[in-house]
Length: 113
Length: 118
Image (tube, rainbow over all chains, first blue to last red; front, side, top):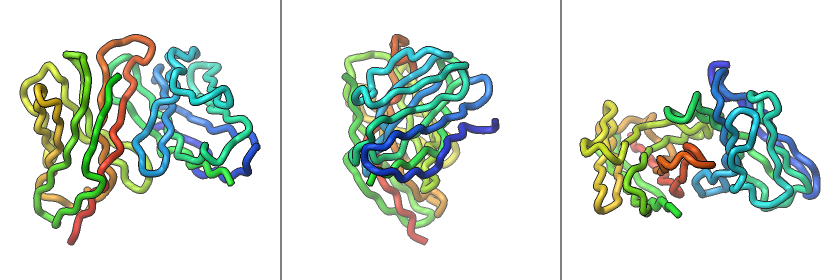
């Protein structure tokens, strides 16, 4: 696609529910990042994929968070047993290779009631 | 660990005037990259300007320029001839050149909200 696409744009869920957020990067981009942006803060790194593998998942806050990228393109961020503190905008970004500009999507705003 | 600090939560500028947004960072690395990103209400982060630490010359992109002071670890953004469309959140970001597990990962400041008055 022309840009990084993220769905859903907005998601409201109840505490304890399971949520999936999808990221479709720019075609041909091998590097993919997930960030979380809480209200009034800058984005914080969650996980980085190079191809299909998670090269660095050190930013995932706990084991309720998991992400996959099975075919090296689309990625899904999965959150189990959501908590109110998980409410944030989840941003996805992709890059063609090891250098160059990082392109961001418009994010998925998650609200946990 | 590297940190990025933006000490101005909000700034305001009159249309056509000039404004400077501040950013300081902390690192023990000698080579790295610095960025300014713009985030409008659409939430999409848009690259405004980038600076390689090994370059002494300050980066410039049209109305946007930086004042990079490596010794002081300061990286301010100057917006000249401000336009209404410049109103947004602005984030300063750092990227390490150490291509290990977090290759290319960005570390962001908390942001500065810029308002432009007509």
